[in-house]
Image (cartoon, rainbow, N blue to C red):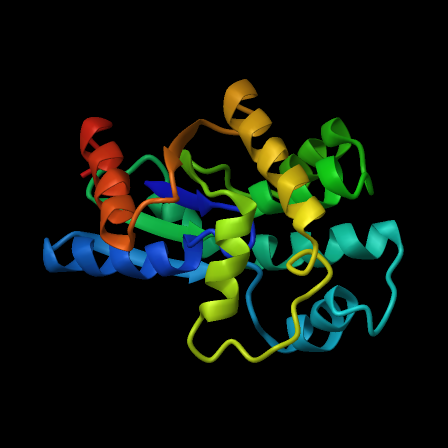
Length: 207
């Protein structure tokens, strides 16, 4: 199965990918995972400076930049699609691009972006799990991250953007935009959130 974890910035999707992956690996389940966007040379030289406001990109550049790593990773994801006891777990994905670049930044119409997903042959998640965390809590967590010394990017430093993104993700869950969604309470402890994610996987007979 191809499972995506989503949240606003600081919502814990990266940490939960690690926690859930460790849990499943100990159970003998075939588990692979990755963080999107991929932090490669392209990200460091093109995307990261734009997020920090050091450079500017037009709408097409933003969209193409965030489509590229999904396309390049597609062949690694496809073998896991719709496969029980075999999981590819991602934190962030094309769902993030929809939320940020289309529904928040209004750089491209939703229907057009979804069509790009088809044309770029981007694998669609079997399930996306949204960790619903209050923006104030998420920002506090982000600031307390071990080793988090970098200046917050254009999204992370704005409580208003995070509130908008929370509403956007809730809308995506309610309307099941792009792929199947389920929402859980991400304000709980790390262990409780991990248990909630595992429970979902069990109830849906994914593991």
